[in-house]
Image 1 (spheres, rainbow, N blue to C red):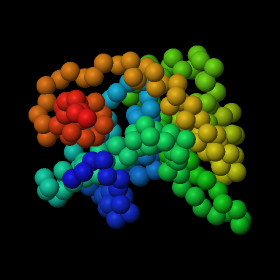
Image 2: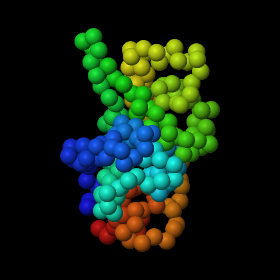
Image 3: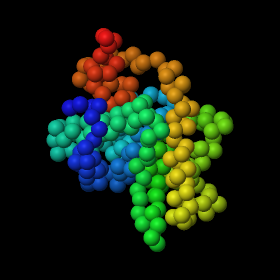
Image 4: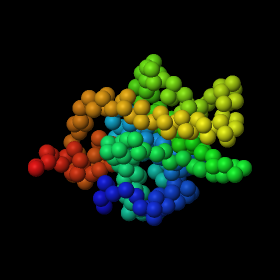
Length: 227
């Protein structure tokens, strides 16, 4: 299956259905949380291999989901890898066109954006390299993390809860989150590019350790392109 191919609507629904099923834990990620999580990984300071970040998706402690078969396991992991690749490719090709997968609903005749679950996923992705993300907090871009923190952190102060106790307030914070993402991407880009490729021996059909979601033979193991 082509890992560069974006998920179709049918495949998106298939993955959504699995993540909402009893096969994963109660704390497993929904599609909007997963999108936020993958975004943090895609734009963050370090390249993180799929083998490290994937287990957090299931919401299970040191356990695999209850897959019906090895074929289903391969299918679901492939869909997630392609979802990750879709996020990463958007930033590579057209970062200004990136849109968080926020939930939207109507309240009193107005369209309200609910970005809390997405922001939680992003915050979880940050925790994979929390020490590295700390460096940004002492930079001029530190205020950009504020709305992500308020919407997504597991714990905020009692005083801070007043900033997220109303749908309208959360709506405004979600808009701030979306505006912040391209700047965070640009901040970390030179640092990500400075990292040397992961030099681990891999089989051709293994998912590449660089985090792209592609098979090794189609990514870092492909060798130089001949023009």
